[in-house]
Image 1: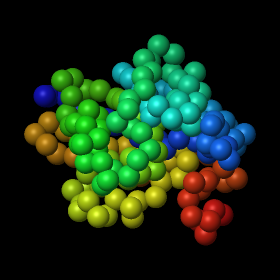
Image 2: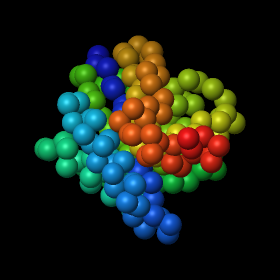
Image 3: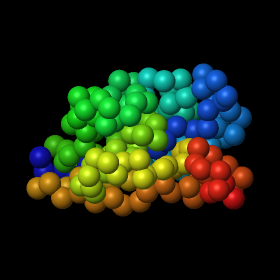
Image 4: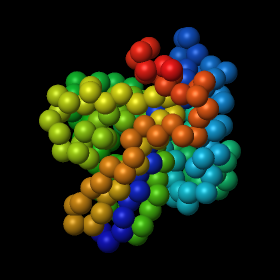
Length: 175
C-alpha cells in the first residue's frame, strides 16, 4: 500500500426522540455538514444501517454528487468492547493505508467514533469511553504507508452555529 487513507468520521446528526430519524436540528446539522464536506474528493461514504445514520448520510450525500453511499453493518451502534469481532471488522475495513491516496467518509455513532480514535492513538481498550463526540462532530484520521497514523482533528464543530453545537454531548457542554 503506497497511498494515504484520509478517514473522515462524523457522528450522525441529532436524532428525534424515538431514534427513527433526525430532529429538525439534526436535519440542519446534516445539511451543514454536507456543505462543509462538499469540496473533499471522497471516493465513498459508508454509514451505519440505523435510521439516524442513514438519514444523515443521505443529506450529506446530496452535497457530494456521484460519491457512492453504502451501509456498513460494522458501523452499527454497539459497545465495541462487547463485540470484539465486529470491532475488529470495522477497523480492518476502514483503516490503514490505501492502494492510492483516498478520502473516505464514515457516518456512524459515538461509540464507533471513539473506537476509531482509540485505535489510532493506540490507547488501551478501556479508554474508548473517554472520547465523546457531538452530533456531526467531524474527526479526521490519516493512515500513512508503513503504518504511521495521525489523528488530525477530533470533534470539529466549526460547520455548526452555536445553537446546533454539542447536541449528543453531556448537558454541561451544551453552551
